[in-house]
Image 1: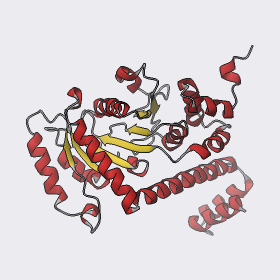
Image 2: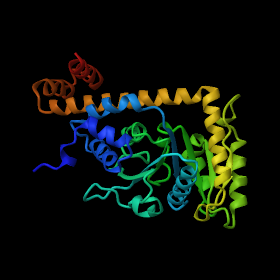
Image 3: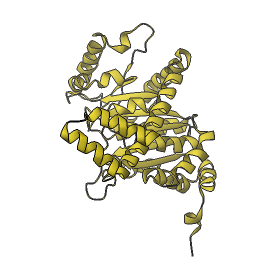
Length: 324
């Protein structure tokens, strides 16, 4: 006999998710991660409810305390009465493709809180510190009624800038004694930061890290343009919950600036455009894959191989064939 959980249709899953049913939220995200044939139905059912959640990204090198900081933020946001979703993107197992680190295990403090949903997502080799399905998973949590969605990136260092295109506010975490200031400058991570967080600020070298960050900010960049947001530098000791008031104040101030400057609307528009583009490119890629070994592609490849047609012209012809 088919179980009720298996038999539930997408509208029912969405309705239950909006009522706070964690299992239904999990099932919707699984449909996203698995690129289910029902994915279009999921997106259509969630569309009327999306666009309300505040999305905050946390990025930084391994060992700076992203998971501990995420847990601290969850606790503080719940104290405000906010419903919180967490997407913790982990490295993938090369064998199963699943998440290796399992942030749900690391955040057991919130396991029994019905106002918190935590999901570990495998990056599955996707560069940029995020899983390919992250934007759609954010849409699920947004549509399910989360007031705030926290995205914690893999922690792979210099590739972790994609989170800025997915979040309203990006926190870049650093820690004393790890050379993070230099690494952040090299990677361009400072350019994507909306708030700079020096975690483990009780350690030696915290003052030097703050000075380095202020010095780097003085060198210019997009944050020095007229009317631009200048990222505040906040000190925290996430393991003890210290600095959370200052961090929340910085987040609130940035949220206000996003609203008054119009930058928030621009970021949401850019995020939607990138999401549409990614879906369209994936669809084209799938159709190109279907053409492998076809007479049309073989004919174009043959002309390129013999030098009678350049590869760009061949690609234009192929795209025109696919979009006709």
